[in-house]
Image 1 (tube, one colour):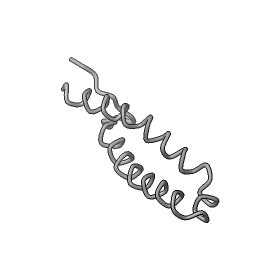
Image 2 (image 1 turned 180 degrees about the vertical axis):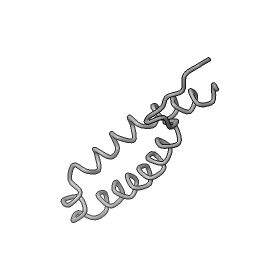
Image 3 (image 1 turned 60 degrees about the horizontal axis):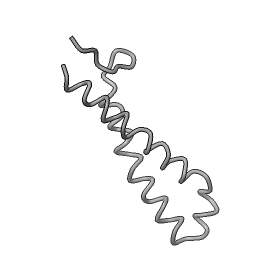
Image 4 (image 1 turned 120 degrees about the horizontal axis):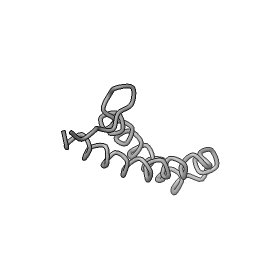
Amino acid sequence: MKETMQIAGLPLHPLLVHAVVVLIPLTVVAVLLTQFWPVARRRLGIVTPLAALAVLVLVPITVAAGRSLAGL
C-alpha cells in the first residue's frame, strides 16, 4: 500500500491546493500593480518576487501530493 503525503494526519494535497489557489491570483495582481503603478512597486518591494517564488515551489509539491493521494 502506498503512503500518502500527510501533515497532522490530513492529506497534504487539499491544504496545498488552497494555498496555491489563493497565492496565484494574489501574485498576478501584485505583478500587475507593480508594473503599472509606481507607488505599489515601492510599497510591495520584495513581497511580489517572494510570492512568485512560493508559487513556483508550491505547485510541483501540490502536484506530487495529488498524485500521492490519487494512488490510494
